[in-house]
Length: 330
Image 1 (cartoon, rainbow, N blue to C red):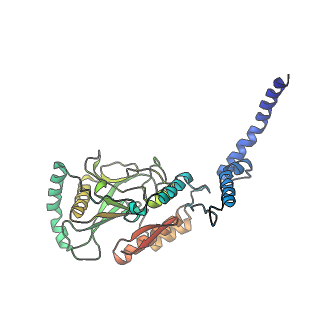
Image 2 (cartoon, rainbow, N blue to C red):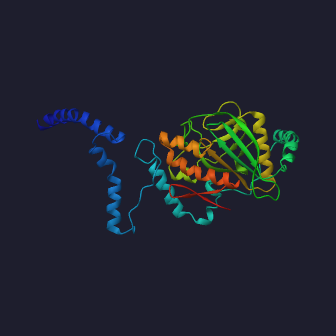
Image 3 (cartoon, rainbow, N blue to C red):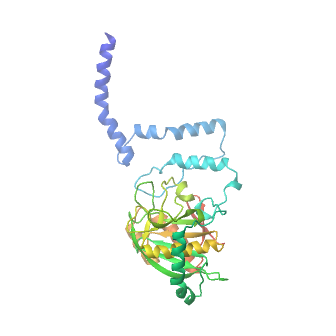
């Protein structure tokens, strides 16, 4: 008799409290209204960890959650991924983490991949650019540096002449297509092009991509991974369409690919790619400041690296520092 009464009472009670639980969950996710159950459940792991730490004295100070850029939510993106990365960093010897700024590990033993097709393209490009290079005091095989600007749809190729210390602008190429909007790439499949400081080593050349040649930017970099951003295979490539990558006209891609490949073959271990939402002038940043976009704090940090190069024509060494970039001289 008792079970027969218990079951109906349970389901009636569940039906009564379900709307309230759903509303409580929505309040917790959106940050609007009071959320008691959701807040209690979501904060349980942190309270449990704090109790564990205080009991066993495993930490000399409380853990501070990583700061994340504002995305309309107070929840940090992918917190488990960030914590797992930190754990692995503590277990892997530092000697195994040889890096080049923000780009991750480099395999400097690899050579730039080539083929009969790529060699043929390179021979033609070398003849075509010879006069322009000579006019600027540059040579085939000189070190290169790339800047990408989403809003202006432009890619700048800079080169450093033999014996020089500063980079000279060789050419500005039109980006035929980039997807998404201004703002960094957050996760795999969001269609966004990345913003930040990346590098391309020999292992990231893609001569046989289904697009017309490709250069893998090395996304996600150290900061992207620290913030829990996901995805990969983001390139500068030739063609007319792109999802998250940056597409140049085939003939322009041939120049960029060939000059970058020649630089690495001539001794440059990798080249840096700085990707920006727009040209980060003071006037342009003031416009964004007045609009108060979600990414203003992140862009202020990017502007530090932008200004560094604008002032000295030498790309900075971008390193992970807390939840942002720090820029060092080399």
